[in-house]
Length: 225
Image (cartoon, rainbow, N blue to C red; front, side, top):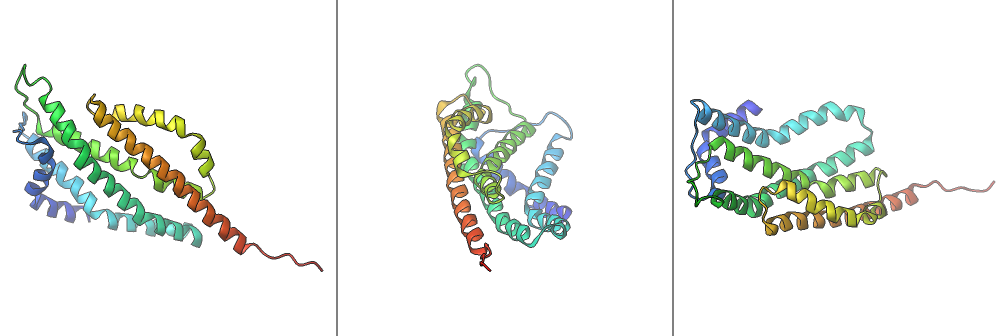
């Protein structure tokens, strides 16, 4: 599946690279090794191929794992799986639209008065893909917390009691994720994480209520002899 999808993506590699290079503007990238251009094209084709083939790969993984799960756990997996995919895709789109362009502009313009920037193609591709992957993973926070709450491992109160600590951690993590020292970009990332954390608290609260309702409805009645 990955070979087939990677081959198809390689046929459209020019369009894929046009999307990746758009946040950088009119920068002319360079490569300094004989095989660098080919290796970067192949790497991007494989990454895009894995992304396209992900539904089939997840299906194969589930077919391997499902026989060991109970019927309740199977329903939970199938319920969470589409949401996980949508949240990750939403994180990638958010990072591509609001984080990569200002970060690329800042890094490319910083020090341009002293020297002309000549950016390696492989360096730019690694920068964009890593940033988008990090933001996509962060967007999984509400899904993971709601799943843990449904399993009874955490509660909404436990999350709410740690709200202040999470706000501080959000700005610390944003400082590491955001490749620019710009306070605006870091605030956007930190604010997004805080909103996702609040969504996690509400999701855990809804899951708890549903779980408690289900337990009350399924609780056996005790009759006196």
